Length: 203
Image (tube, rainbow, N blue to C red; front, side, top):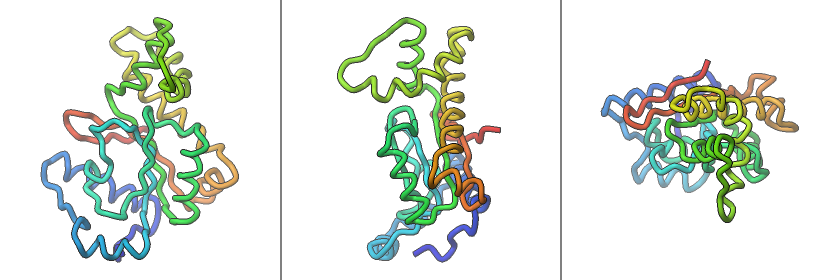
């Protein structure tokens, strides 16, 4: 396993962001992606971070943060929302069973799920099948952005959606909120720029 596992959430975040800088600079280390790591993680996993991010094919977390097999516990759903019980349970498992000390909610620019929510609010658009199941949780963020100029609505809703998920986790009991409150888990929000590959932390 990783002998250099970050000791706390701040160290975990520093490691993620250093990896992203390498990735964006086209100088990834690509550590922990070999047969030795596969063998080590076949016995057990010790991811240092849980990342809730979008199912979008353009932001695979291990790649954009330049991390290896077993480093990240990634939960992906279109629109990176944490309202579904399966998503919440996955995150709780990452915190309790796997002892991850960082929880990041990662949105991204030009998110199709956020666009769909904005269109639902602004134009009354509807969606077939179960697509609405991932659009509906983003509607509150889209409503907050609806008063902005049209070319700013999606970008603003992307950020607001991340903030809404952070607010949800700050109140999610019985596991996530206490872990955040006692400092054993650091909660952060961020956005990803598709062209540059850069991750920006929210204030």
